[in-house]
Image 1 (cartoon, rainbow, N blue to C red):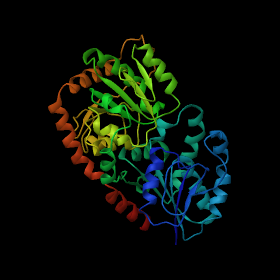
Image 2 (image 1 turned 180 degrees about the horizontal axis):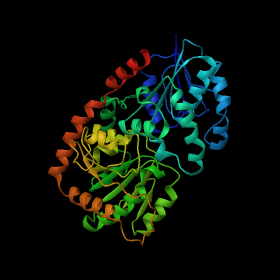
Image 3 (image 1 turned 30 degrees about the vertical axis):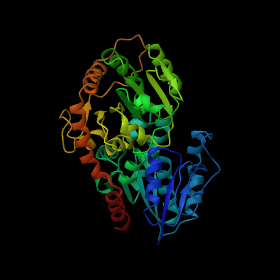
Length: 394
């Protein structure tokens, strides 16, 4: 009997980081990739790619190659094996290969497929998820919101789903948070600074954050906004920021900018720990790593109350509309991309009022930071690993 791990690639996304962390703690005899792309360090033997595909390969082609990936995976497994996979394409490959080899397919969904897949991607992936996910030996969701989405919209039977929250190296993150900032950033973070972290993609709603911040600047003129992460919307977002009259900076920090597009940074925790607050405008989530990491760093969290993740983290057991015990939950934003000159939507006004008041209320921010640290203790890797061990051995 052997355990193998499977994921699309080891690009530096949230799902990839979680699998890499598990690979360092969960005994296994192989880490397999659908694509030949490794940006994250993993312990043990080098990952084995099932193809020569990479980031530049068309998503349509990679989806069309699911049967090829499945045959290659099946050739490496047998009836006594378990394969644990993360991310939709790898999950589908895992289940398809299990029908050939007889291995036990345990799949893990990291986001809400209903939110993640729309347009052409949705037309391709949603039917595949509905077809294959219910056939898995076990489906693991990383939040109750993801569980509900899989049951309601993708036909996964309730008895076939287990929820396991993401786990983190609490001590390692806090040690990294204490390290110095890159050159030039101390002066920026000494200002009333709002930080957000995550890829610049549609799910994160960063265009709303820019409009919110333009309103905050009217109340707190010295404020700065730092966006940690890169992605396909960087150009559109920087153009919107400029249209809003905000001074934009890329790369090395200029002392007088308003919005800093920092790009990918190797140690985001040093930024989080020194921010006045963390703002999270996501439109949908699974279990947001960036939000949990902000709590671990002792940063006050102000988050969208989107349908999966933030409420479970900040206000466990509460109902929609109830206040968060470990951070501030704010209205979900519309997702509509409006030009710079368009009037702000009501939710943006509510966010701006809340952030403006918080930036000047140090006592309240200290309270949020302290309560967030209490909640962060629930997400240690030891607890997550115990849940994974139970799921994989029963």
